[in-house]
Every structure is written in structure tokens, then in C-alpha cells.
Amino acid sequence: MNDATRGTGGPGDGTRAVRAGLPEPVKHEPTLPGPVFAAHFHLPGDPTGPYTYGRDENPTWTLLERAIGELEAPGRDDVEALVFASGMAAISAVLFSQLRAGDAVVLPDDGYQALPLARAQLEAYGIEVRTAPTGGDAQLEVLDGAKLLWIETPSNPGLDVCDVRRLADAAHAQGALVAVDNTLATPLGQRPLELGADFAVASGTKQLTGHGDVLLGYVTGHDAGAMAAVRRWRKIVGAIPGPMEAWLAHRSIATLQLRVERQNTTALRLAEALRERPEVTGLRYPGLPDDPSHKIASQQMRRYGCVVSFTLPSRERADRFLDALRLVDDATSFGGVRSTAERRGRWGGDAVAEGFVRFSVGAEDSEDLIADVLRALDVTAD
Ligand SMILES: Cc1ncc(COP(=O)(O)O)c(C=O)c1O
Image 1 (cartoon, rainbow, N blue to C red):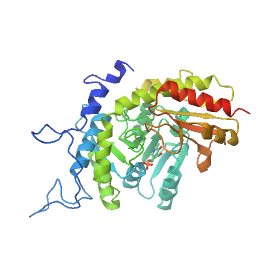
Image 2: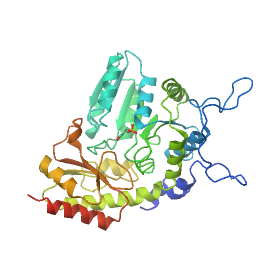
Image 3: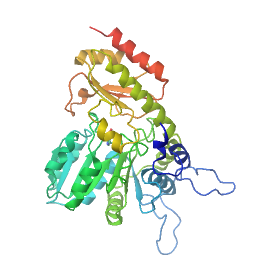
Image 4: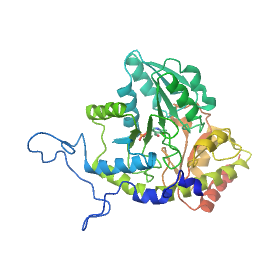
């Protein structure tokens, strides 16, 4: 990638990632202080912050939240970041802190497969839920009178993209808040707050931390009132990350630019190689110039992610292909340094063909990974 990675000026993404959230140097102290394990903090007298009780605040979160805020909103000091125990904890915190009985919310109908669970819960609380596909900005059609618009772009697993600025402008014109799930792109690939969103929300379990060993979520936003409600929700529900997870996440962010660069470059190469294969249909990667998502993606994304989706002729063929791979683990999730792939239909939650494969490209050498994929396709040919 080139100077696009520099965005609006200032240091490049690699520089920002390695320094994100670090405290001012203190003689004899480490660069990134270790995890602070504390359920409570010494607190004589009136209970004033910043650190009182471990469900409310923790110094290890503070540094991580600073790092995430710097990446999602470089140069802005009005943006707050809050970390959570998982991506779903972060998503739920926004939905359930902002919506009340009688409100309407617009969700994507092709988003992460736990969203329908959230939908059922919202409806049980008397909140009207409308859904529409991500592609073609179809959520615009059902926006009228909604309190919150929830966008997931690129969508998981279909990799459709919508025009965040267009949707955000339409939502704001009628007083709705806008949240964008930025999991797949990471803040180095897309900055929803700059595109007009009120919240950028993500699962840090994926490429943000990238080693498949941590569950994490975060919410960033610039509306102090809305963020106060999200913080209050975190306190009520207690969906907080452990200090060890928070520290591991911060440590991992130092290599975010390296990982993203390597993984996303190989993802494009893999997509190009798959395009040549007759047994592959429905190939999607927003970075491919002829992908239906590419035009909008190229306007609002700085990098296109590490996930490639495609369909093999049958469920059996997809299973045999996954089994034949040597460098790719058959596992769910995505974004890790070790490639993973799965037949997504096995979960039953996504509207995908039986042979649909979601492939998450890791940090292996491109040549090795692509050779492994092509070999696995060859040896499983009917
Ligand atoms: C787009 C997206 N959002 C949210 C989540 C939920 O994240 P977590 O598993 O950390 O709760 C996922 C998980 O796969 C996801 O893909």
C-alpha cells in the first residue's frame, strides 16, 4: 500500500500502530505497562475516579482505549473508546443503551450471524426491528422514523459494501443515530467516524488483535451523551475484558499494520488466483476491481480486508477441499495470522449456498498459501 495509508497526514499507519496508546516514558518503567490485576483500588474518603472498582475502570483498559481511539479517529480528542468482553458485548451495549420500547432500529439482513439473536431480544423488549440488505444501500428504503441505523460494511460473510456517508447523511437528516460495525475492515481499513457515523463498533477478536487468542470488543463515538449511556450499560451488564486480554490486545495492535498489509495483500492475490478456477463461483473480495463492491469500497476504504468468499459446486466438494488444505485450519472466526476457512452453511444462520466458503487469509507466505489452495482444489476435483 502507498501513501493512502497516511490518510489525512501525520505519521503513517505503521508508526501510529506501534505507538498507539503508549503512556509518556517514565524512567525505569516499561514502554507498555503490564496488565493491572485489580478488583478494587485503594480508595480512602470520597469515591472519586479514575480507578475505584474493577468493573468500572482499569488502567490497562485506559491505555488500550486510548490506542483504539487514536486508530479509529486520528487527531481527534473528542472521541471516546470503551472496551468490552467481546464484539457482541460491544454491539449489545450500543443497541440496548440507545433503544427504548417503541423505537425502531434498522439492521442489515446479511450481517454477522448473531445479529438475529439480538433482533429477537430487541423485539421482546418492544423495539421495532427492520432489516434490509447491505448491498445497494437498501437500508435507506426502511429508514423512515428509525432511531438507530446499524451498518455492517463489508458484511460478514457476503462481503457486500454500502455507502456509509450516504446512509449516515440520510439517517441524520431524520434524527437517527448511525453505528458501523468495523470488524472486517479494522480501523486501518476504514474509519466510520470520518464517514459520518456516530459509533464505530467492532469485534477486536478478529484482525485487530489477530492471533486467535483473545475475545474483545469496543465502541468508539464522539457524542458524549450517547457514549455515557454505553458506559453505563457496560457497568450494568459487566461485560468487561480481563486485564490480561486487554494487555494482549494492546500488545497485538503494535503489529496491526504489518499483519493487515501482509494478510490483505495475499487476500487479493488469492482472489485473483481463484478467479481463474472454473469450479469457483460467486467469488467476492472488495479489493478486486471487478467485484460489485469495489467502486464504493475504493471510495471509503483504505484497505479491503483479509476475507475472501467463494462458492464450490457442492457441500461435499467444499468439505473435501477444506479437509485437503494443509496450511489452513478448518475453523470459524477470521483475521488471525494463521489462515482459517470454513463452510459457512454448517452453522445454518447465513443465507449462503451449501458450498459457500469463507476464507480468512493469514500471514503465511503468499506463494505457499496460494499453492496450498490450488493444490487442494486440484486433488478434490470431481
Ligand atoms: C462482523 C462481526 N461483528 C461482530 C462479531 C462478534 O464478535 P465476538 O465474537 O468478538 O463477540 C463478529 C464475530 O464473528 C463479526 O464477524
